[in-house]
Image 1 (tube, helix red, strand yellow):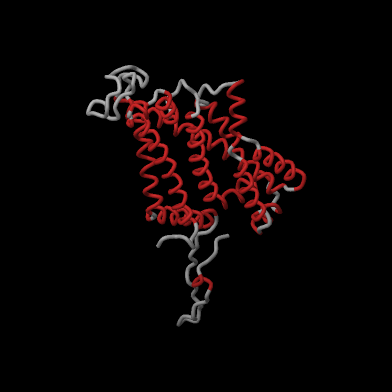
Image 2 (cartoon, one colour):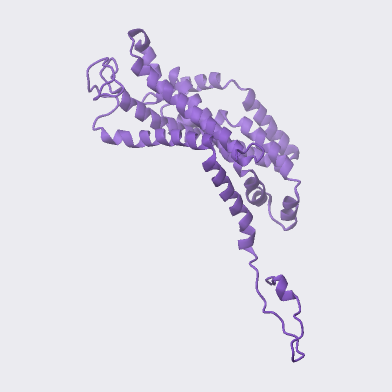
Length: 321
């Protein structure tokens, strides 16, 4: 039953005829709309402060600019990034913006194709690590007991494994032939710190009153995690994914640079590997190895700056007014 406005609950003074006249009842909005208002208000406030935060806006512009460059620029070329199309070892010019390699390949076209694979491996690797880490963290933190001990032991095992050494062995016997397979290896070894952090947050939230009320109402454990605990950690989970995205980009660039990445797909790390392999530094071909290095630095740096800005947005104590 909808509530009545305060004025409707008050009795009016008797009229001249002796009869009491009541004010008409005015219903007040209640139910799902009213319940949804706090969440919508928090979203609007977060968006408002995010658009006013210079770190979030600046980092977002840099990331979106690189993403647009990687998606749009290759569409204007009628040749591939590995084709020999120009003079050998030519410096930047109006025709070849980033110059050419020692074989006459267009460095700019290799660069924009490398941005594509960089974002793809960051999205897939970071997404997989987030999915594994958050799932294990939520289950371990909410269920507790033997399940928590088993998952915590698994987390510690993966945490102490030398990821680079294991990847070298896997690459020797299995091989990394594509960006998805590289992202799979990165995601498998990048989730332990996420699981620990989410587990600690879940421990503190599972004893709150709203979780107890959901449990008393008969809601299952999975539904409580999805509907009650996870939404209260949404800002933290989003910032965690940004960190995983940047970490996956760096991890992939390291693997590509040392020759453990896929060779059939151009990436920024593979560009630096080829430049070192063909003595670009000794030959003075700075336009070959400098753009991919600066590209990786700019993308990862912008992601981390965005993360700092989002921390200021979601934390009122750090918020820039």
